[in-house]
Length: 514
Image (tube, rainbow, N blue to C red; front, side, top):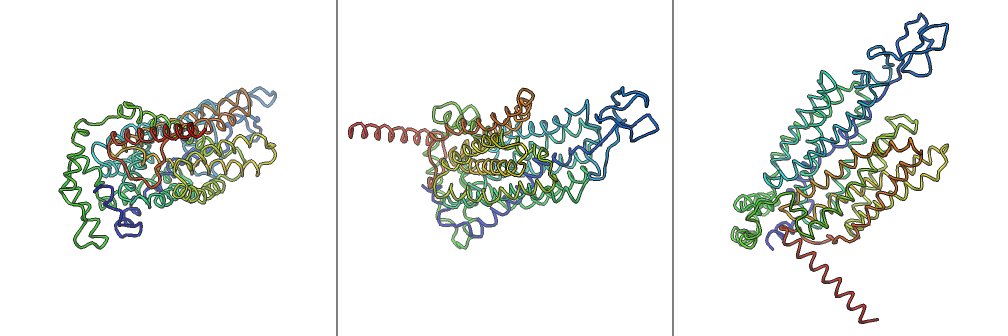
């Protein structure tokens, strides 16, 4: 029990925990800015074809064409470089820079899909890598990668280079999220984990509020990229202070270093003699797990046994559906015809109270209930929007805000729930894999939006049904409220077997009673 009880005397306000949570939460402010940056860097300014006639105001309704002659209504498409953009609102965007309109309009979506593909690959790479090399080492690398690749994107000479840098930035962003959240949870006493979720969820949401403010001040997309990437240098330096997870070190049989980190944390918290955990206690724990940890775990172990397979499939469905709908709503806000900067601030601020409510529900009612509740009701709100008349813009906007806020709360609660369900030896691999499914949902969302060519209401039917359906399997997963973190797959299997035996006994008792 040494590892489970090592931090239980500490609180969230203990000096070590306060500093650690602050340092690991601060970089999350930049996650929302990078995820939604294309709302502003790829905004489409008004444009028209450069006329070959003397009357520049004599223009057709289709901005991609121009009249051939003053004597007829015949038009011709203008070529790349022959379009004039109105730069009164946006000084420069990637749209005006590389002429991504008309026949090249698909390249705008390609840029965002490339970024999301990078996030997906980052989940595949940095999750398992953190379980092999450590959370802190991977976190430091991800912050460095965001700095370098984000700066590279700001100086991109062409669209292809821009997509490459955005792909690499997306990888770093995903590695930052899963390892900052994972490392924080492993240094936090179990009763304070929901409070940490409130703090880190708020940081993730505040990024959406910060973005329109910075974008309003910096109307040039290159300066926006640079400004939102360079702060990672500061965070990189700060995280050198945070020690590696003692749980991961102990599991990797680096007991001496694990004990040093625990002693350091205890002394910062005022314990002059250090932690009560001894090297013998850690060594004994390693001896108990020696037969279990001889082989290195791989992502295949997420599906090897029934208990892990059930966890991974159910959580993957939950993560996929929440991101699938969240990014569809977030990236389609221009349809309301309201000022883009103001609307993004409203969307971001509206999520803050719901993130707090979600964490409170997770802390006092249960993690499983919180995830299922927010996920399924977001689907209900989306389906309800189908019944609203198209001219009631404010009512439609309100329902959309509620649906997006519920989806955001579901995502934050899922981070806590997923980290607690997986064992230490596969925690970052599991969180990385479910995050990969989350990003897959974000990539697939634009494809679902394309179904509106068949019927205008079909995308909303899809976005409303998917979270309700995918929330159902989560109801059969174990609750983790007030339970210790598990370290090995064998402990997960034992937990599943205990839960199954309890259900059988309950059914037998009910049968006997009848």
